[in-house]
Image (cartoon, rainbow, N blue to C red):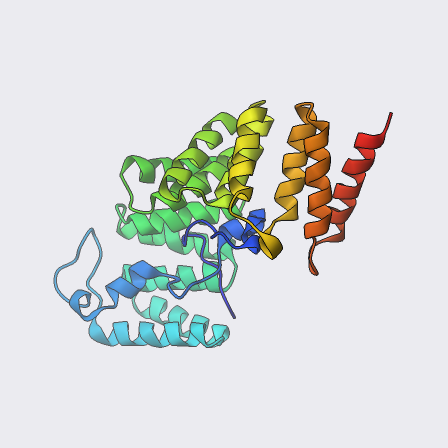
Length: 286
């Protein structure tokens, strides 16, 4: 079973990544990077760090087995094994973290994962990767105010994954109706991944809601600029056309809507075709 890792970062520049759902990202082979680091030979012994007990080599080997099971689609076996480890080692943070990751990422069960992230933070309050994943769980559960509080603490602490933090905090801020702060976070995310079309699209949407129509138009134009041929995104063209129409540029809007219809490919939703056609009809209406 392939899991999802919200901590991986912003979607890339491929056309399918311009949908909002892509912001969560797909697992790229490091679903629990802190756990992988902790299982390396250099980190399986020695004194406890940051309130965490050292991981014995035999437990580290069992955690590697759990990881192999997850990666080969044997989720139930992986979950059973890591649950048994958690029962045997209830104060070993890395084991509890792997259980939380297994449930939250590979199992897609944030409500079940959240208490385990909480337990890790009770053992190691300063473990920032756990705080990040708790924030992601809270956001997925719709508890955005709590998620933002965790994201704020991580940003203030200079956590290394600045792109992820700003991107995910922006999404939670939008859910809370705090568009002005969200616009700032999208801008900070773009500073980390300049010219990413998906990030530009997200900032454009917020800017449009804030009445910053000219700035939103610039963002969408920047997102479309490098796209050619089959890579042209009709969704971006539709959004830019709507902005142009709002700004009184009927000819530019029509050109975008028509180009969007021409750019549609197999797999694009019928609703997008309908929206483009309806937008052209609206321009023709007296």
